[in-house]
Length: 545
Image (cartoon, rainbow, N blue to C red; front, side, top):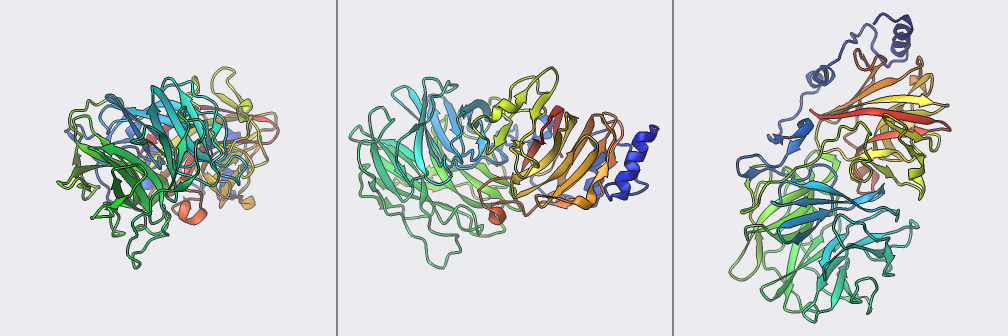
């Protein structure tokens, strides 16, 4: 580094504690910075996943087996639709908009995104239900647009790719976790938390009866260590003359041994319901298991006629990744009950029979030449007009400022699928804009670096550390963030990534998850733009470590 202005800038960073004095700064390859981090923080022993694009872990091991998760990172409350030979799945999207990304698969192991179904903000969106009736696709959505009153909304489409309708309020107050079913009487019903049910009109876009009790769930022993009873997530299946209902009880988070899957059956959608004699059919019984808080299951027939459950769980030691999507085989007993047979979900399991592998995942590096909103990027808790901040005048993405800091702006966020990863992005500030790179849980929990025209800022504990401010020269900045063993390290380059300065402060983010901050979210990569100006982001790069 021979430019005296840049050299002086790095001296200022060292004085502020951002760069250790005398630290070598040459680090042009991806491996340079992550390797240094790994030497200080060796990763714990982990199962060996297959590696896909950008080194992302991949469930399909390529030898007829797979290893969970089938979708890494924050993909909670899965709802699964078998539509001919194709499977579709979507998840809770909470405050991210566009939201409700639909994924597709032909073998239940390899999943690729189709696109977002929900474009109009409804506040936080919890566990939805995806179904098909009379040739039309429906998603039933519990949401609280005003932040207070919950209701169930519906969107619908002729094609799974959309376009999807605007949300229709079904005026079912105080309910979440809908599960759609057609009864033996030919009528349509939604089951909701509680467990209660309500009859729908034939078009599925209004109610046609009262909300009423439907089923009293099985109760676990009182001495089990759980979060709370919380019967929720009813999913219904009709098979061999029986209606089966899978229900989540025990609480979604809290103790690792809380969440579980129970089953009941009835000849009629109106009951009476008979409890499965070996409930719960899925439960984490020991905190030493690889997956915690397993629940919210859908039973689905595989492409070759075998049977499976898809549900979510927290990865042991990595609650920051959110609830990830797991696939477990089941068998049907002679008495007609489902029984889970996956055992230790950290080991490889045989893939479903008869399927054909399709595309898996997606590359997360982004030059911003194409619109990937709702597919990769989403605003956190946006206003109805948040997309007005976005422009693409040439290379990169320009984001107008919102709020004064990340704590009152709406950052762009991206789900992280891997335990360890590195990201880079080039940041240019214009007209007094401030922008930066974050790991973002919510407005009360984030870390990162921010930059004005002439000052570098440090964000920790969702606050700016004023002591860490340091002057910067004008011009574009290349910023790198690595997370390994949930220890975050930052690097900064003024020459497009040819040479790097190591930030002098590392951060432990392992506590940034639901059990600390609530909200059922995950720790995501975030890009923020605040103030009255604008920020250009370009050449975003992702790589799993």
